[in-house]
Image (cartoon, rainbow, N blue to C red; front, top):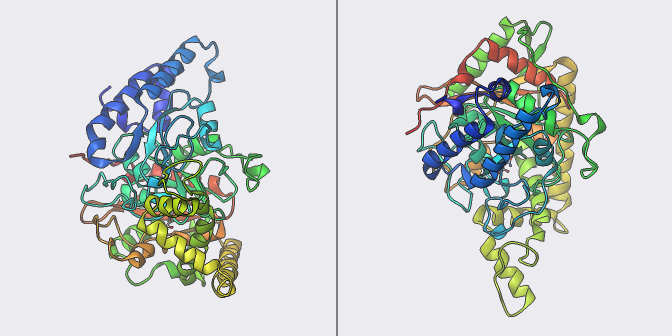
Length: 490
Ligand code: GLN
C-alpha cells in the first residue's frame, strides 16, 4: 500500500487486524516519510528509528501468535508521536528548552505507559514551544516547525510539532498538551481534530509542568473517532496524580448514527468579536448550521466574563510557571554552566538555559506572586477565574454544548508576531477560558479560507463531557469532509 501514511487510526487498527499490512510495514512507511519531510518541517525533535522498528516487529509477532484476537491489546502496532513535554523512558525530553539538554527520563508518563500497555509504537518526540509557552512553536530552542499546509506559516503551538506531524502524514495520531489552547489552536491551524481533556481526566504524572492548575494532556488526530480511541486508553484515575478522578476512565464508542436530536448547542456572543477573520466566522456559522440540520437546537448563550480570561490566564499561568520552573537549576539534570560558586552556577545555568519567552513569564509570575503585589494580581486573578468558571456552569444549565471559533484567524505567517508578545497572547482568546474553567474542548476542521488554509470549529462541554463532544463531532464528520483533506507536501 502506497498511502499507508494517510490512514486514520480506525483504518489502521482494522488493517492490522485483517493482515492488510503489518505494524512493521506501517512503521517503516512513517519512518520513510519522516526522513523525507522532517528535515524541512521539523515536526520531530527526536525519532526513535530502531526502537520503533523493534516495537513494531514485536507487535507483529504477538499478533501472529495470539490465539484469540479479541484478547490482544487494543492499539497493538499503532504508531504514535509524543510531544516533547511528556516523559518517555529512554528518549530525550527537552521541552523545547536548552535547559533540559541531555535529559533522558528513566520513566514513562502515565498516559504514555497506558498507551504502551495498549500496544502502541512510539515514533518519536515532537517539537514544542519552550515549556509549552507559545502559540506558534517559534519559541522552541530547537528551531521552528513549519505548517504542512503552507510552509511559510506556523503550525500553531505549543503542540505544533505534533500537529504538523499528523497533518503531514508523519504520524497517524499524536499526544499534545493544552494549558491555554495548545492542542486546539494547532489543530485548527493544521486541519485536525484536537481534543483538550477535562482537568482531572488524564493523569499529569510525567508531564513536565507548566501551569499545574491548567495543564491537560490531549490528542491531535485525523478524526473525532481517532481521538476517542486514544482517550479511552490514556484516561482514568492514577494514584500518582491526586487531581485525577475515579470516574475519569471513559469507554467511548462512536457509532455511525448521525443524529443530534435534542442536543442543545449554545453560541456565545462574546466569541464573535472585532478582529475575528470573516472566513473563520463564516465557517463556524456554517458548521453550526450543519449541526442544526443534524437535529441540534441552537440558541444564543452568554459567557459574560470572557474578556477577562486573557489577563487572568497571563497572571495565573506565569505565576504557576515561575514556581514550577524553579527546579531547573543545573544541579540534577540538563544544562549546567560550570562556575566557581553555586549561586553563579544557578544564575548562569538558568540564564543560558531558558529562552526569552520563558524568562519573561518567570519574571511576570514572580512579580505577580511577590509580597505586596500578590493580592492585587494573583489573588485578584483567582477571584476572576471563579467568575469565568461560574459563567460556564450557568451556560451549561441551559445548553449541552457550546460552539465557537477556536482561533481568531487561520495560520499566521512565520515571524508575524515575533516582536510583539501581546499579539501572540491574543491568539489564545478563544481557548484560554476552557482551561481556566477546567472543562473539555474539541477543535474540528470546519472548512478552508481563500488561501486554502484550514479553519476550525471549537466545541466546549461541561466537565467530563468528552463523550458528548466527540459524538457531536463524529456526527458532523459523517456528513462533512473537511477533516479528510490532506495538505500536498512540497
Ligand atoms: N499559548 C498559550 C501560552 O503560551 C497556551 C500554551 C499552552 O496551552 N501550552 O501560555
